[in-house]
Image (cartoon, rainbow, N blue to C red):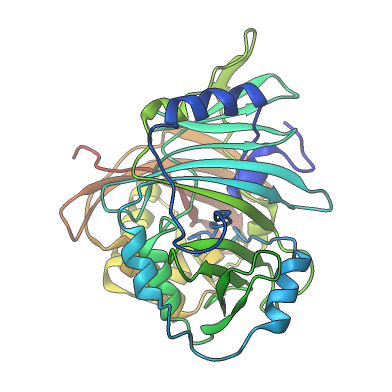
Length: 410
């Protein structure tokens, strides 16, 4: 796969690519399912941009290119509360939608790629249940039977991983927006779109615990989010990472939406287990993790994953950061929100090592675990464990979670 910027890196920070034929087929299949928000006054709305907020992974950061029209809108905006719009109205409106199609661009490095993303929420409306993502010129990723498939157009390979690996949780809907309201930096600006004359509301904030800032645009009449920008800094400076200029809202999406026809001659194989190089410095901290002296790798995985979930359940932020040093820079407030979203109350089981790999620090292991949430549902979550040898002896740390299956069997 491409080392400098492969499809996995883009889609783990948003994912994959589209073709004209694929778009045409999907639009035919879901045409009857689409719900078009109506505008009681003025021209038909252009539904725009949403996504990439409050990703659980610290490495997932997103941005968007600023348009001239939006810049004019902000410059001319009246900075006062918007009496004709409130976030709770949008939250209520979005509750009925369980499907989204988002189109725009992503700029993971110096290059900008077109991106199309289809998402389906689970029954709670909080988690991604299925997705199809396409990044122009790079590849495609999709889910099938609780596995994630990645097609690299250059290598003519499809790589398979267990679980749903698109870490867009909470689902970009009611819970995501409700979390926004808790941000201390939350601000509302009312104004007009200079291009269409439509009344707009702009919401800005920074993401607690991460170097990330957001700009969301809402239509006052429909109450819907119509654009979104996310920067990798707290000042909304420079070119944002993601730019979605179209959003279509669906009551639901058929499973066929997420089908992808693998080209003939393509080799299908397991995805190699790797971790981002950016995580290695944090995971080399000798004050983190647990000692593995006298334990097999299976026993070490069992022990550290049980402790990891126990810290989550007890809201023990200090223990959580020690076990997973890649979360060391996340604030208590951010971790509390993440734990609230997960709602984990019980660890049911930790499985054996399913896949192995290696990094510059040493061996890697991918291990499934089964946890119960407050509503009684069971989720299967895969965890990556990094083993290492230091002057203090053998030890291991949690790198991160990596994929999940909703409503799993105990």
